[in-house]
Length: 96
Image (cartoon, rainbow, N blue to C red; front, side, top):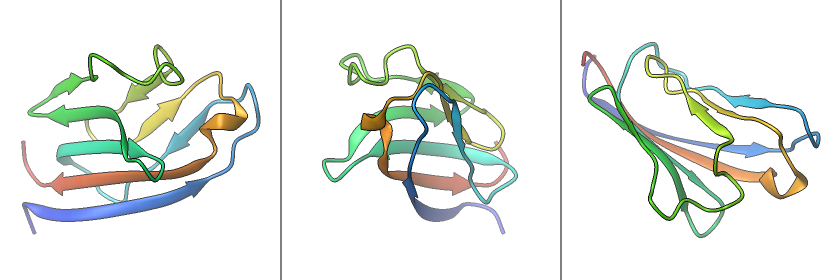
């Protein structure tokens, strides 16, 4: 099935200084938006193979996030305790 929209909310606890990867349940992502916390802080967007970070990206994530263009998995490096919380991925799966 192509063009499936899904939401994935993941509670995450981190070990300070260790990287963490948040997985998606899809093989191929057409579009994905990752957000953090109750306020829905925008972290990163993948659309048509283009990764975009908000100009005013929250300082806690600046320079520490990487996105897998195929699966939409998000990796956060050099974690701190403030990275613990809920992460939401809004996913459109299917061919690019």
